[in-house]
Length: 90
Ligand SMILES: [Zn+2]
Image (cartoon, rainbow, N blue to C red; front, side, top):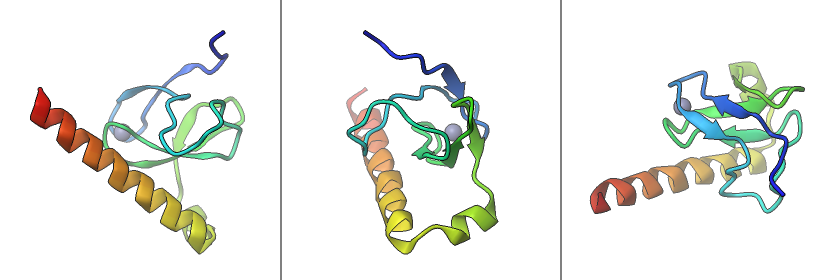
């Protein structure tokens, strides 16, 4: 049970994340090069070879396929929606 994914810290805002908390993906374990969205600040992140998170470079973002960019943008919107709802109920 569980995974070997280390606890990661968002390089944008310092938010502590369990990297397996992927809202958009069915697979629980990310692979190097996978993209993620910070649940704290909705920054776009990339998994490194050691499955830590780093900020995506502008050049990298520009080279992503349009479909993937749309998917990530949807993910950002989803996080924002969840955060809004969370704040409302607390
Ligand atoms: Zn963040």
